[in-house]
Amino acid sequence: MTAPDELPNDIAELKAIIRAQQDQNARLEALVTSFKKALFGSKSEKIDPAQYELELEDIETAITQVEAEIDADARTAPVRPPKQRQTNRGSLPKHLERLEIVIEPDLSCACGAERHVIGEDVSERLDIIPAQFRVIVTRRPKYACRSCEGGIAQAPAPAHIIVGGMPTEATLAHVLVSKYADHLPLYRQAQIYSRQGIDLDRSTLAAWVGKSAFELTPVYEALMTDLKRSTKLFMDETPAPVLAPGRKKTKTGYFWALARDDSPWGGEDPPGVAFTYAPGRSGQHADAILKGFSGVLQVDGYAGYNRLLKRPTPDVTLAYCWAHARRKLHDVTQSGAAPMAQEGLTQIQALYRIEKELRGQTASQRHAARQECSKPIIDTFELWLAQSRARVSAKSPTGEALKYITKYWDGLCRFLDDGRIELDNNTVERTIRPIALNRKNALFAGHDTGAQNWAIIASLIETSKLNGIEPHGYLSGVLTAIASGHKQADIKDLLPWNYARPV
Image (tube, rainbow, N blue to C red; front, side, top):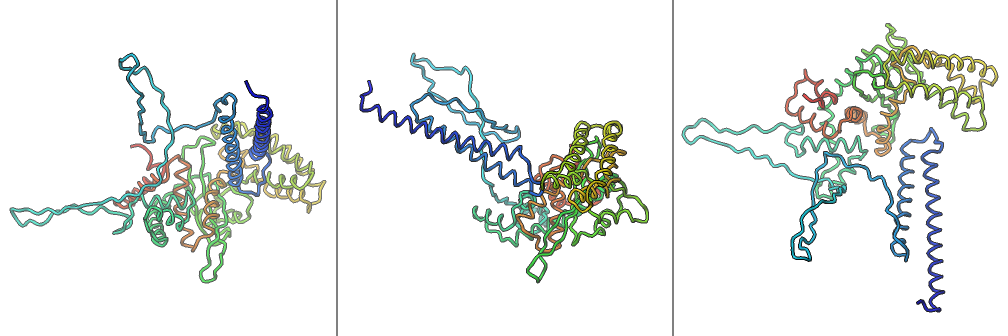
């Protein structure tokens, strides 16, 4: 029985526990509200989507911290233990190496007999070993005949990309993927290696990257050639700050991305993207990159692409991007009440709902469905566009947005007549995001040639990813094949989709 003088202390302790739990619940509710807002709330179109990922990561980390605090308090509190929290642990792929650990109990029973197995509980946990370095020692014994002087026999030395150097082709692939896929500049990689006692100067790593880029150039050129034989491509460009020699400041170059993705209409050609560095944004660069291409090119509203329409042979048709048209109206609605712009957004949203249902159908099926379902919306939108422009000032934000849509109207409507054309240019914009991430981490390219090396390697890495191929294994295999004397005539065999294809 509790002594009377102990009751006030117990009550005070319980009140403190309740206050702590209330505080934890309030913090948890605030974090959940922030998480929902970050996940489902409106997002600025001017902010890099990766920033939202960082926001979610931090909120999720904070939520887990509070939950761990609650669990710790529950284990020490004089109440029943909490129910096991249901969490999404993910799944562990089958190809990972399994290291089995068997934990045996005492097999002797109290009766003196020995227990026998009636079942087992199996759990799997993910274990990560930091990058392991090893040294491959190659020995080539020399042999001579004791009976004659026929000469000495020795196996030839295996060929490598870096002749006489220390890296294997797998090491080169690791440096390339770390720099161009995981966005780790070379000096940071050198710092990571030094923690393992491997002293590699940044300039040494740079030399490896340059040599690898040179050897991979034929594969990159084969990729570009393969893309340009298609008759439907996407194109976009993004700034690439490059250090201007001797001026201690950067100049602005551009990465031009040429992409193919025929999966929305069931095309047989594999997806791919090829980046090209150019010192400017003039349409002449797009024209030079697309030399030999004829067909439909889907782009944003940048006027430089109009140069393609001035070719002696009119062999390029421009299709424009409804996402950019939508963005113009969206920006108007963000600055205040804009019922006219909101009405336009509603009509564009109706087009996207139709496209969602058509994804994966054949080009002919998409064409038929668009004529039946999308064309009436476009006809209504065109009438609304003309009437709305007559009602607002051409210099107002709404008027400017409507002027933009009118200017590119023919190209925006081109998707109605060709089932291969997408509603927007988002396919190629997604391929450019890794370039933007690498640009943020590296700040700028050190030279025009370095920027083109960046374009070559990023093209092969991103094309691998688009085809579901692990980039490190692909680049390691391709570099090994090149070092072993792969024939230039068979260079197409080293493209990601061909290299990974089972024989």
